[in-house]
Image 1 (cartoon, helix red, strand yellow):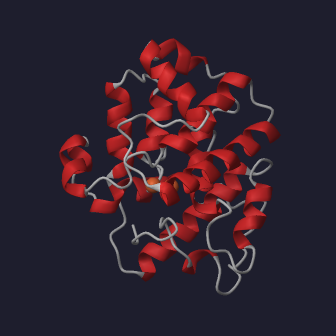
Image 2 (tube, protein in one colour):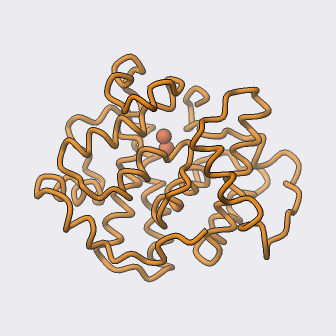
Length: 237
Ligand SMILES: [Fe+2]
Ligand SMILES: [Fe+2]
């Protein structure tokens, strides 16, 4: 898949309102909007995701505005994670209302940010689909999808995630493929429903991104058997 190689970030400033730009810049520095519903432990997770995205953005030599965009996504992706599903469900687009409760916080956060004036569609897609994946992710969408799973606070007894964190800047497509495969495997093992967007993401990537890295088996007891989207201390998504 070809993702935007290194977007300039001008889409955010060109398409977002002044209020939205302030929300994004504040978020990039760790200040969440007052409508955030996230406790201390969650905020620490968001900070780790933002930190990892910042590292990757730096390794890819992205410009200052794009780094703000990446860090803001790290802090904002779970901004409504602790709101109740019954509050979130009416706020998400109709076609996503059938998602299970723990999967609603991404689409709900994206809709709220859109209401606040964020017009950067790729940014909104990254937030909305950070848990389930999407075939139209740009480079940030792909990075957030991986960073949420690989951040250093996640359980990682055999170092599977640490290796992918280090590898991501040079091989983002392959690491994304591995993370997607691990997440899908966990969903299958739990006999849970695969969201349509996850299936579309897989179908788009399979057979392309495995090249060069090979289809190495997962080390025992790692990746796939760990939480797919669970944050430390939270119920399974
Ligand atoms: Fe999340
Ligand atoms: Fe998260």
